[in-house]
Image (cartoon, rainbow, N blue to C red):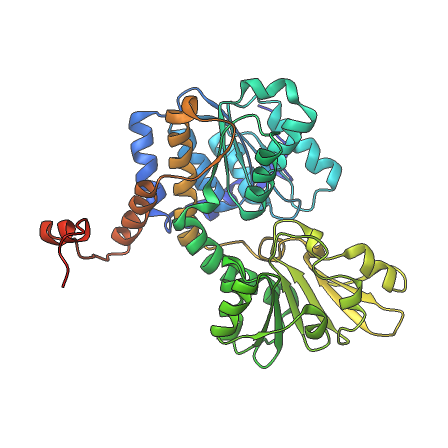
Length: 419
């Protein structure tokens, strides 16, 4: 079995970490038990490009239980947990190509190693795997039946591909499931982003001004958690509807150029590029911290920061690069501008990834059953599957809810009964 991980001797530590996460993932456990009996993925080659974390390991073990032949590569150079990668190789015999801190060339070498598996199903987080397949390995596209995509950025890229008629097989937008973006993006990103900022910098957020760029589901979560830790929160947006919502949620709203001299900590969660640009960094406070929790590090214009600086940055802490500007001020870049929740912390808690990866597992099963009738486009998981995941999650937490009576259900479906 071929693989490329940092150190196979980390496998035991990785196994403990996976077991710890799986305690918090009862929905995925229930799916794994069914998959083991029914074998819905039997013999199918799956190439996954995901953040290699303990929660992802739980998903890989679930797909394997369902009969899939899996290869896993990292979806970001800084998001891999090396001990988890080692455990999947040693204990589960799943080929993994992922090393935390790998350079760009190694990252793409690993993507190509995953594609050497000749997948029939792609499972992506950020659309890099699908993008490389469509641009550089077109001859393999005919082998792919369908795919799934985990995150907002990847869905944006896939929809652009579909619009340009470049996408050649159907892909399920897992991110668009309610049990994914309502919870993973808001509660998962909210908590893990602040966790990453604090682990990287060890600053006290109470009393500081935190500028959150983007008020989608991730931005909502980050802003909420920052306020919960006592920070003063400013939100910057380009969408008037989201800006209005943020205002009515109690946050200050202003353009980033106005917020730049006020902020102590900056967090981007937009999915776009050059959100924090040179014009903003020129007016930031001495000692400002800038970070990103979007999928790619393009949200911060790092080349512009380098041009504003005198010489190379100092690595003042493991995940803090300090740039000395020509003006004499210092700006601290966290996690090389990559997703700070995975670069400096451990990503989303397992309890919320339980639902996201339940969507991945059930989404793969759904696509296999239905891909023949689908055009090359981006699809959303059926609402009944989404609600079943929510029901299983509530059940695992010991919560019960009401059910409609026949009379109530009939009333809601009727137009004849009124005042």
